[in-house]
Length: 77
Image 1 (cartoon, helix red, strand yellow):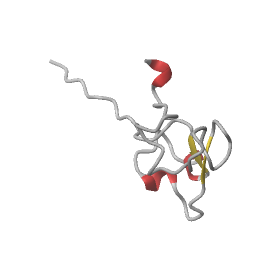
Image 2 (cartoon, helix red, strand yellow):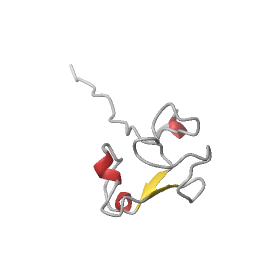
Image 3 (cartoon, one colour):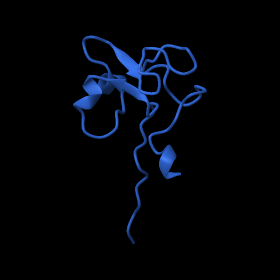
Image 4 (cartoon, helix red, strand yellow):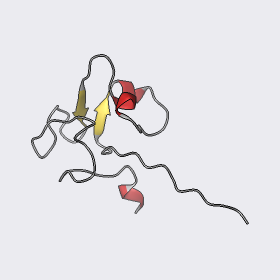
């Protein structure tokens, strides 16, 4: 019998962006996948450091539970 594995889902909002994320393959799974030495990231919805909820975009904050959070798989559900 074939065992199915659960897909790995990124804990970060699909709109979180950084320069480092343009270089990785797949979804970011840890803060170090998102942040580089500049420690700069932004929201792709607003194209600014602040998200649509007017709070700072950062891997520690852009997770499930935030009002503007969207899962990378949201469109597939």
